[in-house]
Image (cartoon, rainbow, N blue to C red; front, side, top):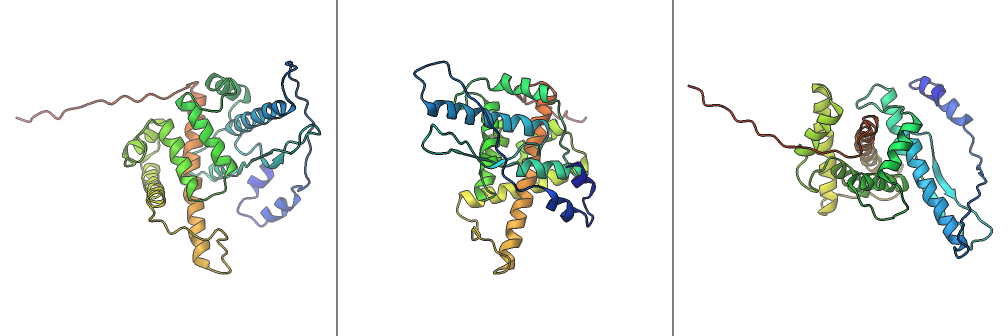
Amino acid sequence: MQRLEAALGTSKVDEIIREFSHAKIQIPCTVSIESPKARTRVSSSFLEYLLYDFFLIMNIAVPGSCNFYGGVIRSKDQPYDPEISLSSYFFETAHLRSQSNRWPPTKILPLSSVHKWFFAVRNDVRQVPKSRMERVLFGLMQLAIADVTPTTFIWLFYALETLFDTKAGENSRSLVERIKLLLGPNDKEFKLLRKNLSELYGVRSAFVHGGLGVIHPMHDETLDPEAEKTYVRFLELADFGFIILLAAVQEVVSKNWTDLRFEETLHGQALQN
């Protein structure tokens, strides 16, 4: 990845990408459950659960470092192989944007710190979230298992509005101001934040209320260049929304916080004599 980053913007990028192996990798793993009543399927479920957590911990610590896209859990003792297709696409894109000095930057965090934080937030196998931060983590998982479609914007705002404790569907002002408090953009970066968040809200609202012209699933530029142009813009907006989400989560982790609490203050303008 360091070689790839160093080659960004040069003719060597395609050459380096071709060097990446496409061979399937098999990792042997043994899961033991003490209860004699536990079914084999339960051990597979525990392994799948642990891989979801492992995926998030690794990618929050070092974005793009772990990819399970197309992965399956194989066992001779179960009738089918469950798929765990978690893609690191958004994490990788966020990291590469950061390497190009684009705001906001992502971080490389100590794995031990992320591990400790993660299990302070989520420390059991429940499938329904019980806290705001746990809902954010589940939102990250949902974004990792889905292709980029209009529903991506639903999941982005689900996670952002949960993390920053804003009401779903209200205007973007509160969310933008709270992101500003946490990530501290300068004036130019804040203008970019407001512009892109406004566009993201527009896509989300148009999709929810039926006003969005959803493109064909193929989005094939050879058949219709306009479809590809629209899809690329969706990708750019989704990438920006995700890097805001990831940078915010990393900032929370680096501060050793397990939640965010916002307090509203009132300042009055004194009457001038």
